[in-house]
Image (cartoon, rainbow, N blue to C red; front, top):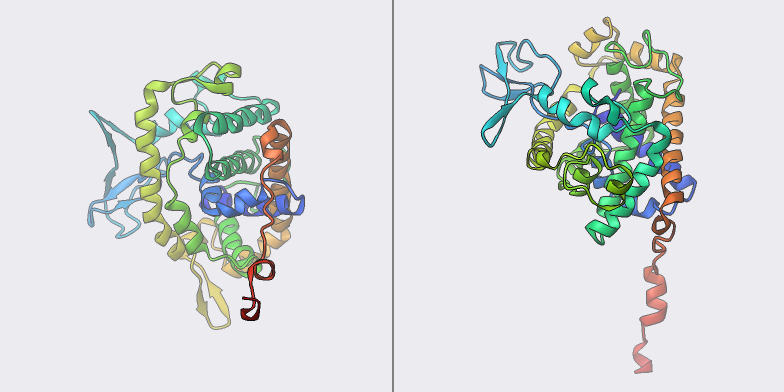
Amino acid sequence: MSGIIGHTMYAILAGKAATQKKLPIVPVIYRNYASYLAGSYLGCDIQIMPEAVCVDTGQEVGFGTAPLNQSPLTGGEVKPWLLKFETREYRPREIHRQFYGRAHLVFGWTPAERKNTVPWDHLPDYAAMVFQDAKDLYGPGERKLAYLFGWLAHIVGDSLIKSVRSGITLDMLGGKYTPANRPIQDLVTFHEVGRKELRLDWYNLLTDLAETPIEPVQLHYMRVGQPRGMLAADFPDAWAPQYEPLLLRVLEENRRYQKIRNPRLIKKYALIQSGTSWKCDEELSRKTGGLTYKEMVEAADRAQFRHALWEMGEAIVVLFEQVIERVPYLQTLPNATKPTWDEITARWKKSKSSK
């Protein structure tokens, strides 16, 4: 599970872990929750764009870099989708090759650029410099800080679920991250964990996430812009200012297409009651080898899926702590405690008789 359902859940759990540990950045996260969750998905996965166009309907379909041979809408033919920018046209795979490693830092670079991979033990330092530059170069405002913590949640979550790093135990249908077990992870996260246990309103969460603005600091941490600040001083390589206009267009496209994807995803993950049981989407069932929804839930329980999610939240908050230790202003954020209305009333209200 590493799509939008997985990554938002990882960030949600990390936020709860940060609350339990009383980290000073918790109020910033929850005051800017949509931006925090946006960072956990849009902050890294720059391939959020159509893969194809349905010939029958003209609608954009699929997900960038995932091959699509027929339209999921009609079963008919599809033609390749292209991102048009200035005088060029780009396929999603080209965008992925150009920017994916820059957002994920610790993996995902093309072979020619693999030397730019940030070692895991350097990640807290890299992130700390980004946070300091966020204040020094981009001025006041806490929305971008929430977005950055979401971005870190994605890096840790992706690294663990894709076994770039060890740290979570999960063996479900042959592994930790397989085409067969991803539908199980998504459906169980969406319904059993998200809706039932955490009482999440997925549609509103995803809608708010997709409507957040582009954060200019994203271009900085991806090193797509003029080298400047503490980040450029300590990480002087791999800066590519020539790609800034293209990346801005990509980030705009990510948000546009995610707004189209959201209702489709809600429909795809919906369950239909059949007697006393629940049925999931037939295509999702097929990918698991024909498991029913009940069997998927049982498979997740056998694999101790909730424990793996707990491990994910714990691992992400470790990076949060490491960054806070390195950035003094994150340790002294304003106290979130505000006067209640009762306290204000006690101070301000005057009886008529006292006038």
